[in-house]
Length: 382
Ligand code: GLA
Image (spheres, rainbow, N blue to C red):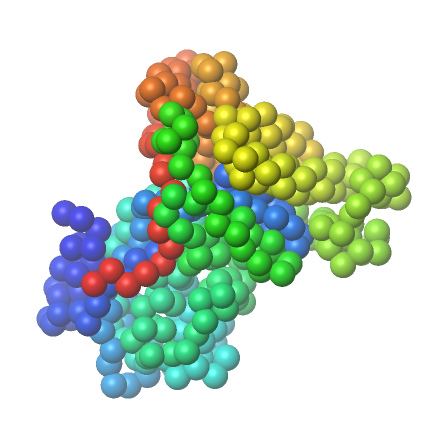
């Protein structure tokens, strides 16, 4: 059964009535620009065809019930719980966080019954949580007829995650889920929030983006993410700039920093921003294959300077490159998750099989893979 049907059927089974509508929001892969978003830098994600679908209907009082197919449970909360960050925890916290962020900004959020189904792999670094936030936000905005400009929505969803759930993420994932367009990568300036839709029709170039879910467990991802973010903020303060985005003279900046770890963190962010700009230039010129070396350089920088990769991730990248990929890198926050590789479309399966064979040889859990096409952003689908 399709994801929308599962959400609609789940709604009917949970609440004994039909939903008023269905809303969907995608997961994402990030083509390039990692750990740059919270440094006011540049990112270039695209939306996946994999989506979270929310079936929903308004109720007359301020209370919310949410059934999740994946969790196989219904969670109910009222205004008091929604208004108290962290009070609703686990998966439903992302939903309560969206209610909270809207209410605290003065929006008249309608009470609602919601049912959630998804085919975005959870815990794989493909932003299943941002997809959930974005789908719920889009549904509540429509149900309540809230005047909520699309350009303001990513920051609201991000705030739900930062301040209700307590994860200090940047704005990339929610922006991709809400603002992406099919067939395009989303070039986002995370300082100004200016966007440009960059045509990214890999199939037309005879290419494919192979996404390998390494199945590597996220090791300490939350704490490591927060510590990387802190190091970047400390470095910016030491350098006397608002954010690492503002470092123009890399060598000069490195010379001012007190220790080698901080120097490497800064070098990653500054060089990664440049790689995003270079990738965008190549894509604008239709030179898709040529972005490969930038992807691979991004990976080396994450591995050696930002130190956020794990052996499963590094093996998938090196194996894909040996098998003929034009470029490959980890995508997402790190410490596990997914790798993407730019390959000739006809070679996709062969490269994926090479990674699987390398994993078997090392005794790693078998990876899962798919070829990703840039999908649409959040929308009402029924
Ligand atoms: C996670 C965060 C994003 C971003 C990436 C790293 O996905 O949610 O905001 O920082 O990591 O690029």
